[in-house]
Length: 395
Image (cartoon, rainbow, N blue to C red):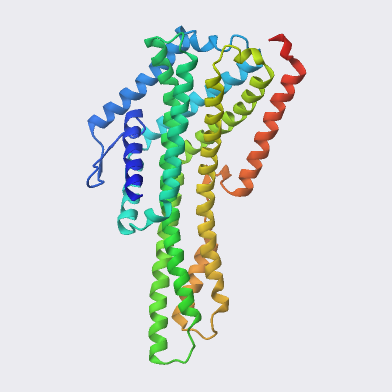
């Protein structure tokens, strides 16, 4: 299983290099990073090629627009808005990568040190990493297959390159999300290890009976030392999480906008395909089947991305609950152990664990539920507008 995770990480790295998202080199054997001219040129060429092909495909190719020749103007506007914002968000994410390249290098080095000092982390995040990589791979593969089948009668070299450029935007988004997913999974794995240590420490502390003997004082000092190490590790881990959020905040904001528009567009697309039968009259049944499977994996991918963050927040909350069991300890503990408990709880109260981006929004279950309600509302508004202004018989 660990080998599969390593393969996923390697594929993610080389895929990132191929799409230009990773614009620095990583030594596979040592894990050391370095900014080289070769990495810079490769990343720049990959991105310039993608945007060049997109521009050419938009100006000169009519193959993509012919698929929607029977669509009404609402379809055109909706998917034009989605495509425009998607392009802008990808562009902004790439600009952020170049402007903060050294920050990304230092961030990667921090995670490399985190893994090297705690190799057991991988045991607690490998299932999530494998699920994410498999889901993203299947989604992208299905997208490529569907695009090729739909363009089978108009497939030329120029069209194929145009399809590749369009799908490259999806690849860039998936690479960024996968990198962020893996980073958050590693932090969660480290939190799980700390919670195990803290749970063991609390069990030992509950067994203490204050008698002021030498053995009692020695055990209290040992527990105080261990608790200080846990508190320091948690503080470092929270600082690393904040650095990760600051470094990725522009990209996360862009990806949230992209995902929001895609989800609304997908709901409207499914409704349109059901209502306007003429849109799919010339499509092979395989496209409908593969498209349905793609949507299933797309929503599964969204679910994995969301719950990866929620599970990290749950791991932190579990640590707070474990520290709350301090009230069950015997009264009259050693002063130093009491002081360490007080400092730990005070630091957690002063600096609560939050995932905030640009100070605009905070990622948690409540806010995610609000976003879900907003998605449903906007999807229904689009469908309602379509019902009021268009009839299926017109197409």
